[in-house]
Length: 315
Image 1 (cartoon, rainbow, N blue to C red):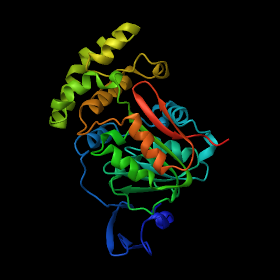
Image 2 (cartoon, rainbow, N blue to C red; image 1 turned 90 degrees about the vertical axis):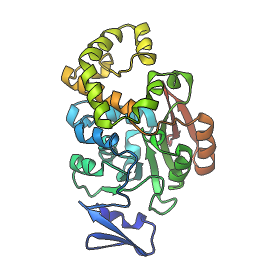
Image 3 (cartoon, rainbow, N blue to C red; image 1 turned 30 degrees about the vertical axis):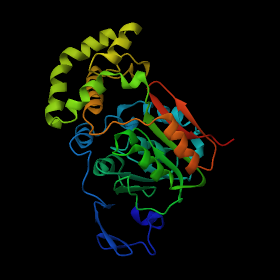
Image 4 (cartoon, rainbow, N blue to C red; image 1 turned 120 degrees about the vertical axis):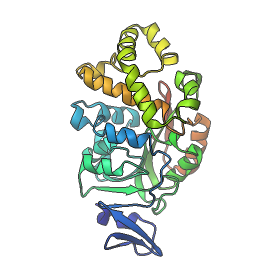
């Protein structure tokens, strides 16, 4: 809830006056309980379309899985009880699937996004431990070095200047605080995929047209990729050649319905082809920025087609 997080905003005397957040000389409109620092978004039309049409698709509480929780714990490497009472700055909340996990683990969360905050509000409801802010993570309106944890998952490569933005968001980590940043990896396994061949065209397409095209192809490509992905060699072929993302073969989705998996495939394929920006960070860049910004020991972990910056779990 905004009022409980006022001290984090950069101002001499941050306060709420009517439907405005007052930060010294600035008056920021508040709508639906959310301060709106920006109404413009380079994600309009792609990410906003996904959030509106698939608002609850990735929420553990709705789809009946623990996928998002398991991914969070696996990728951060942090014990489940380590977030209790911590204040987290979430950079890019989308519809709120990770926000839900952060709250469930006992954190107090300030979640920022250029678009989708109203969808997240609808999904999560008003909570004392949650403050949603519509703003760009390029220019965050908070006091430097004021958060216990800065968390940025599946976001930074979709921004205009990933290196500059990473440097900016890590400036909000408290001395001896923690951080987690995810990026696609900048290596041949990722960069030689079909999406980087198609994106020069698809990212310029009308999002509605692209979305309808993917839906139109789904009756053919979904069963085809379901069959191909049963074989490991064919799965690699799909990764590099077949322009469709289908997770039906993955064990963690085995109990989900065909209707859900088809919807998920449309979501993931559109998510790969539509963003205006898709610029993975190099390991060297991540290491250099983290080395300057973080006081705590950290590691850079390479997964399959992604790279993670994470501070090491406290022992």
